[in-house]
Image (cartoon, rainbow, N blue to C red; front, top):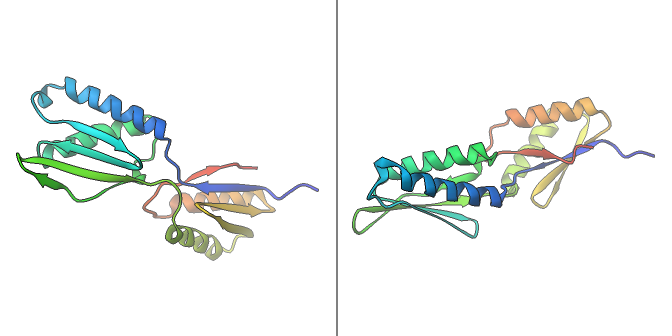
Length: 163
């Protein structure tokens, strides 16, 4: 007897691609004319990204270049959540960001509630930091994927293991 079709809803970041994007960003910014003599530093420590620049304007420019590199490599930029800017002596600005992998409880509940409210004949199970959706009809699974793509969440979702 065959199992019901299913897929997993995840929110992951490829850390190798993040490292490559950070390296490419630093390389590009050190060669740019408008950053000559400026402080440009991006570090990746554990699941945190630390951006250091001369002022808020330079920080925004650094983040723009970084987001362009991340998007080019297929890394979800929605999963990078920046904190407040900290100002240090010598007019340096620093900002830290959390790199979010996995779906937290709050977003898991939003996703499963949205699936249940859709009245589709599927089951959604929370499994640690991902959600498994199963159903007898593949069309229902496709409808769930479309529903979740239109859902407004602070993280980006990926759909894997479609069987």
